[in-house]
Amino acid sequence: MTYDFDLIVIGAGSGGVRCARIAAGHGAKVAIIEKQHWGGTCVNIGCVPKKLMMFASTFGDLVEDSHGYGWDTKKGQHHWQQLIEAKDKEINRLNGIYVSMLQKAGVTIFRGAASFKDAHTINIAQSVLSEDNAQGKLNITAKHIVIATGSSPSLLDIEGKEHAIVSDQAFYLKERPQRVSIVGSGYIGIEFAGIFAGLGSQVDLVYRQSVPLRGFDQDMREALYDAIDARSNITQHTRVSPVKVVKNDDAYQLHLDNDEVITTDCVFFATGRHPNIEGLELDLAGVGVTKKKQIIVNDDFVTSTPNIYAIGDVIDKINLTPVAIAQGHALADRLFAGKTRKSAYDATPKAVFFYPPLASVGLSEEEAAEKGEVEIYISQFTSMKYAFTQRKVKTYIKMIVDKASQHVVGLHMLGDDAPEIMQGFAVAIASGLTKSDFDQTIGIHPSSAEELVTLRQVTRTSQKQ
Image 1 (tube, rainbow, N blue to C red):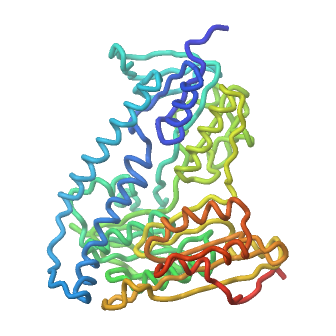
Image 2 (image 1 turned 90 degrees about the vertical axis):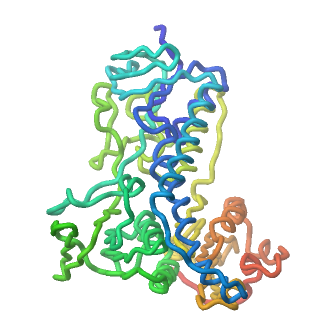
Image 3 (image 1 turned 120 degrees about the vertical axis):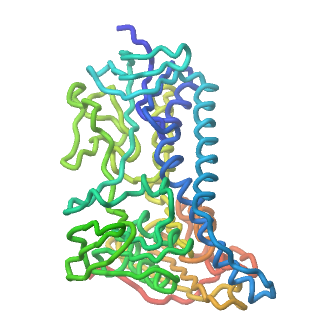
């Protein structure tokens, strides 16, 4: 059978764009379909704007810190709308870059909502073909089809949920709310708590666990709890869940299951995400999904239909932008170059952009102890930056070493520049370096990062009983 394209990619997020560009670079005839955001969630309503807003939230504290160093700087008022306009301008610029990259790679671009007609045919509703601006419905075919549609934030299913926002709306608020109640303590909840607090809002952070960031190393979770407590303008409400949201004139009341009621100007649900499969008509192509609507794939990202693949958040493996990019690249290499591209998924670094930020690579102590006895190295200190300041921001470093092999299997840090530092050390973890390799490395002095190569005393050993 003759097809219009060798490959159709549905979704122009980071993973989909990488897959399309690499496939086109291998000589494949490629089309990509996107209905809304070129660059996907990360570029438009995720990682990129969130980090820009995090930067904005730190300058007030830096003004205060400067006084200890002899500056007579004065803290002014933050102008929310100016920040949003600057953010929107940058995002529009990045959108253009993504479209330009695809065009330069020779990828045919379609704008519209995609759905399957069968395993090789995609219908694009209200499509716009970039070359001739033809509008209407369009059917295109391909030998291979990749689903890279990502995920969307979920509203908590409680009474009054229609009064709450999710992260998508938070990036476009007309005004910064003076009081914000954030429900959830994952990446999004923690990061936005820091953003709003740093810009002057009073934040109530509500979550079910005793400490934030479920799934991270327990010591690091506790260290982050303390860092949040030390941060101005944030009140943590732990071991509680919301039961309803009530609108009260210009404010809202968030009712918790411990009978507490929080009065707020904005209720923000940061309570997870769900795969974007609605409207794709996956059943017409025989593509199977889990009960949670995640597309089922094997290790090569092949779905239950052999010529259809899925990557990124829609398969819900490791929901991080660089992982989706790696998956898209590997898939394109395998399909169109016959190459195997490996990634060290077990050593995927991750970061939470609070202030101070947290970064992690490899196993938590709990995960490592499941595999055998481990040695734990811990260092806690206040970095030199805060020697003269009123704020005393703590740095917490933790190394996990497999006792038998002496391989460093986990590394975690809470403190200034932790994500930048951890990216470099991720190479060491992925390469299987040992504690002696770290020990023989000369540190950069004076720096916080040198602590990672000067840890000498075992704090404790740990093993599953």
